Amino acid sequence: NDLGPKMKISAKKATPLGLKLSTEQAALGVTKSSMPKMQLSDNYWTILTGPQVGTLPSAKASVEAASELLARISLDLGSKVSAMPMLEKKLIVLESADSRFPVAECALVFAQVGVMLSDDDVRILAANFPTDRPGFINSRDLRNVLKLQKSLQ
Image (cartoon, rainbow, N blue to C red; front, top):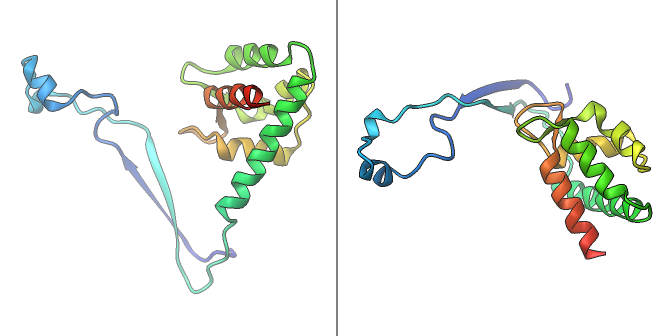
């Protein structure tokens, strides 16, 4: 292992993000102690320790690679008639209710609208449009960024 020993830590949020403020709840007659605490999905951290700590890739390089990839995808989609609406429909049909789209299907769906993605391109998309589950892309965010990119051209 180039980065030394690893430890994994898991934590759960105590409350969902959408809870109203306590004062709003109190105005409705709900006391803080009676508000249910919901267990949400895990958060995972990996802590690297040891004398040998490798160099991690810079965030700037990742952002630049994602920006170049999105610009290329947007150009490819713009050069084909109705490719963007077709891609949107495919992503919406294949995504889950919480906008998760399987990474394994990414290259195939883009190829169906005429945009060829390499495995590295798919990894860049997965890294820049993450979800709370590995192996999925946040397709809603991806669609919104591609629409914005297209409008800027």
